[in-house]
Length: 200
Image (tube, rainbow, N blue to C red; front, side):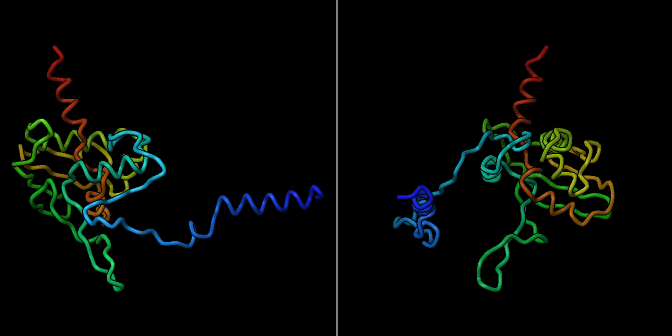
């Protein structure tokens, strides 16, 4: 066999083994047990710190499901019947309700919300997390800036269960930006406060 023919044959065989037709053309099938969900990803979270610089996509997926935000995006049904997030509809998570004005939005926090150790969550914890998100750099700061959330002075712990975000400018993306994963309550807030309490 000539070298050129051999290379052509091997290249075709190699391509077929890498991209077999069934792997490309076949739809994914769910398992038969309806209470079992199998999720396959090519890599795992590199950390569980939502405000960590360099947190990968699986890390954000974990944090989306583990850490509360003040509110989250609602859901809408598309014309084809499938579900999608609704950019302009918000639902409570850590906040029970909010009051939006031209210059600020004030959130009332759930009084029954606690950290994993049972410690109550307060507006100071939310402020600590927001302050960190706008100053840590990387994607968290970039994402917060997308809604004109840029400096710690914009975040005010008014009372134990009242938190206010002051606007630096009128921005239609501020509210939608507050409902994504980055402005969530970081678990590091409780860890940081514990460290400060132990220091003399």
